[in-house]
Length: 319
Length: 319
Image 1 (tube, helix red, strand yellow):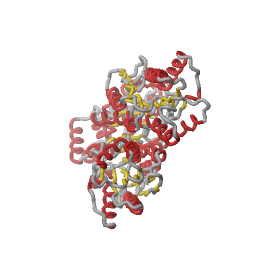
Image 2 (cartoon, helix red, strand yellow):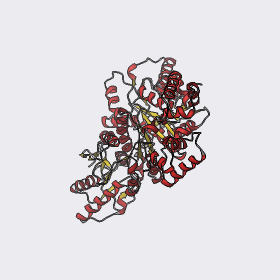
Image 3 (cartoon, chains in turn green, orange):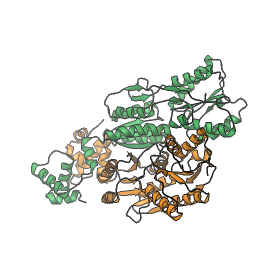
């Protein structure tokens, strides 16, 4: 493969001159520039794209921060982002963080170093103050309500969704309602905790710490949930499960153990994934694919916009 | 933010000189180099990382080609790759191809342009001759048996897996065996087709085109499979399903329609995903997470190696 030294020899100029031409630097005579361009043309030299990025200040690459790529929630968001990226000739750089702040910082650092043009954070770990420091280096798009901060975002109102779902179950006669989430510290779960607290207070119901079960991300996490519930003196009569995968796992466990749904345990999943449809699980529909597409377009836009997406309650056999 | 022009002004040199220093070019006097370095240090200037890549010839980025990021098979491979990438301080650039050759070529082009150091192709669409042209630009790692070609690879023997599974079902008394795959044209499916043909010939069984059902990737694809089977005059008595998700979907459909498993339809899934364990589906265990990790290490290695991973048959209630 022809390299920069070969080009210099062919054009009869110094390596520095070739580099200047490649990088569009000034102070190269017309003759030398022409000689270099002819050498490039003759040699079929493929320019190192990093030189192009350096001169353009753009990489056509967008970073995507997500905790796990194999979780259906994030996989669907990513699919939506990836679909639009391809159609718009952008590449994606993936940051799988396992919710570690240091890994989110690495992604921000890449934005600072102009290795990516923008960053989409599907689930945030860093504090706002940290993210705000990096805003000067490029666009940062979030998947939560940013409440007037200078970030673009596409989100659903997790507080309202949770409150309405709790009220729906209460109207069906449930007073012992539990819920299953991924992590307690995330922005969405904080909103859910607030909705739960307010719901309990409004209806004079006692708070039961044990009804909040975290680390529920995958189908198989349902086994742990069932083990916990079966050992409770007063188990919940209804569960809101923020992942259809986990909800499907719980339904499967209940079938095996002869627990009647919804008579003994009512279940509402989240996202209305195909598995919820096929297993006839009631679910909160959230348009993840469209959210992903929207996040991408915000990442390449110069404007700061905030888009709330709507949810629908799909009632099936499990409530 | 300080830019290259600010640095030039602070150091009292030309922009070109600053650029030369940043790019480690020769022909810069000691004094000027010192002045630029002092300006950088004073101004807290963050170097454009593309300049670093240009001078080092390495980006610490690895491309990953996969058809869909939301399919459990590829999501698990990607998870393994991503885990090792993080631990070794590499970033991943994702190419979601939907099996379109043009998108695989984009990834290869990025390798040629040195925007990524290596490329992992989880499922290939391009011909070997095309891939071989790009070998000169960087490491290309594949997830299939390369049969002596100059690529590193981590793979399972799809031919042997399929033949053994067919023989197992035959010994259980099945003569009408069908199978569900993602696409007919993929390298794995070609090996499966060969195993199937040889199995039929060896046992004097007729070939039935309709027993091969493609486009089976997701849980919900099971509905289509069941619709097809229910309309057949002589439906298969056993199905090998190359995705546990689809196998789980088929089991769910059978439960709804009162079809007895395994008496009326035997089912064997692939990968031994958690859903197979929980729904008690027999499955071929393939260590996808470990394969992903191995693929990553081959991508950063200078040696060409080929690693065959082993599979295990996990017998549960569906055969």
